Amino acid sequence: MSLSPPITITRLDLQRLEKLLDSLEDYGPTAEALERELERAEVVGLDAVPPGVVTMNSTAHCREEASGKEYHLTLVYPHEAGAEGTVSVLAPVGCALLGLSVGQTIDWEVPGGKRLKLTLLGVDYQPEAAGEVR
Image 1 (cartoon, one colour):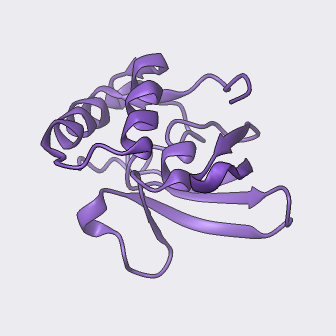
Image 2 (image 1 turned 120 degrees about the vertical axis):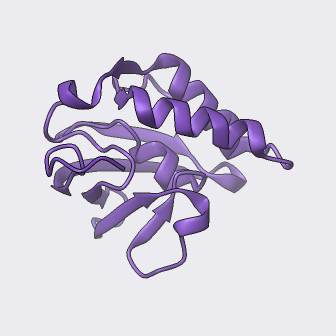
Image 3 (image 1 turned 45 degrees about the horizontal axis):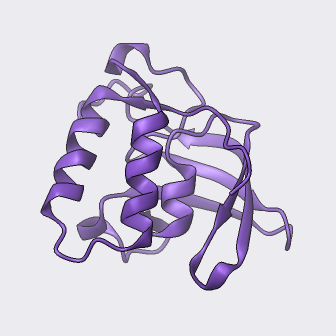
């Protein structure tokens, strides 16, 4: 994996994601990648998360660079995934989005060795900016 951009997560998301990882019976490559992301993240309080950062339950506007295709994806916990427009934090693209700031690009390895280059174009919705406690 190439040099990853700095990421920011909330203390609450960190606690919930660590609990999620602890509960997994099948600890696969994406769970390992998520654990690495949590270890390198700058952790802030809910009131200190900058706008334009993808937190849990944020809706991100991103572009997959190889195809140029743009997506609007809501980053959710695995049990909430499945609805149109949602992506689990335990999916490769979800794990890659967590903590990104608008304008950042991440180069991420997905299953099968393929690389995904994803650019965050905007955050359409962020629970912290809306004043919601999740």
